[in-house]
Length: 454
Image (cartoon, rainbow, N blue to C red):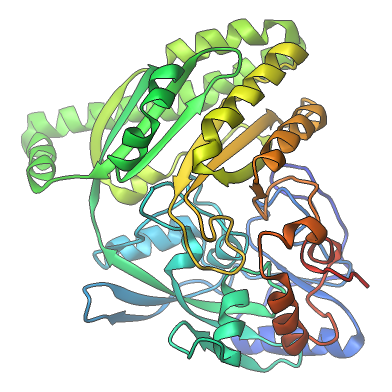
């Protein structure tokens, strides 16, 4: 088995794909009784060994779909979904109910359980990651018992503590079988994508981030150019105008042409041409600066209104390795300046842009945005090209700025230094109570969560 980015391969002793929660519980209990470790996998989209096991490997794809829909007095809705539901399927199911996730990342191939357990996030200065939208969990313990935990439990109680580690804890307190999410009425976004000078973005960074619901940008190494993405709730007039353009035969033709243009931009220009650029970079690394300069100027501006999940998501067809760090937002300019300096001095060929996103502070125990305004800086490298020197240099810069690594993306940090950022003693206490024999451990969780590895 291997991850989507082909960064990790492994061979478990046994694999199983339970059809329902009862079968999942029996499989976990049986493996535990045999002394096998147990890990579950979603889409394999983590670049780290988060899902690796030498014991029982569980594929949760059959545990998919919506179980319950409960409207709340505050206008939100609590939707319970089975843990193996892929995000792209969840978005369709919610849309059919007139609902949507408040915020999403830009990839929708992951399972719900995998996405929340590794800290998947989107962008938005007033919004948190997916784990902040979780209101309850159902999980299978080592003995096969199904336990529930919600955010309604009293702070400091055993149930509330279990909830904290279950909603974002790398699957170390049990195998999630269902997740209750807080969702909102479906909404459209007005999306604006424009190439800007990087200096324009950075000089007005606070306004850029705070004046938009969802702001991010891609910077092309070796250039001073960025592709900016600003997504805001569409007004009723904007939605009506979009619907009017689609009305009638002529409108339908224009709408079809618009969708064809979007498909061309996304699939041919963003994926097909980008794949060709990376293959050329692999064959002739010395061309990378010129290739990046062309890429930075070739992307067309786009302005459109669409359902939120269609705007949030961007298909990723070109395989890559990725490292992402959450740094204090106030440190972002210096971090990018240092990264730019290293790239210039080293001559490292990097045909992938650097992605920058933002998040609000939250109180989730293992959230990378815990307690501070956050900028996420993600560095990528084409899967066929070496990445260790680039990522090593980037990690030194990120760490010096107080950065926290994404749990599902490449890094070399350990619990010893991550303890300065997270309540790992509390996490260890909850894990010891939920999984005293370490059934749900693996080498990666030992490295990043255990202050006293076994």
